[in-house]
Length: 228
Image 1 (cartoon, rainbow, N blue to C red):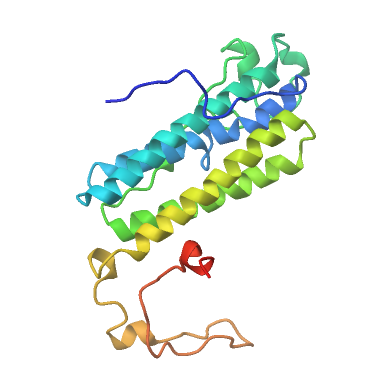
Image 2 (image 1 turned 120 degrees about the vertical axis):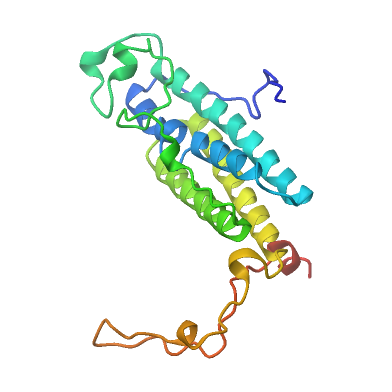
């Protein structure tokens, strides 16, 4: 069951109308690293999770990503203003000026519709958590690119909030990953001779060597590091 609270997670304001930047920001609504992708990925992954704590984490973050989607859509709406003007929509897609009456659409910045092909779900908790960590990192990178290309204080305030929330989600997923036992794709890691070989196939130069004691991936816990 879902409930909707009309109060945004954070108030969204823009200093001025900027349709060109609205097109750029659109990518974080319906693009491959955007909020819709994150929300649907974590939600679809949660259906298979048996651990109640991890399932709750996935659902909490999925719900927050939907809140982020709402914030981005609000900003796109404000940046588009109220004047339909396809002739002067000089970057990205002009579809909002032709078919949606400036309403934010579930497309990327080039006008391609959002697709479920963006979602990565394997049913293996370790693989899905690593996908989510990567998704949060990529989303932060896109927000950083967007931040550098706008001087609007209201937009920058929203982006700063969102990219810091991506960091929080990244940290939470890494903490959940660290709690995994040797199950699923983490079982029997590095036990065969083949898993210890390094092929030096790009020559000249050899910067890595044989893997003497391969270990399943782990992440440091930032909270524990900063506790001293």
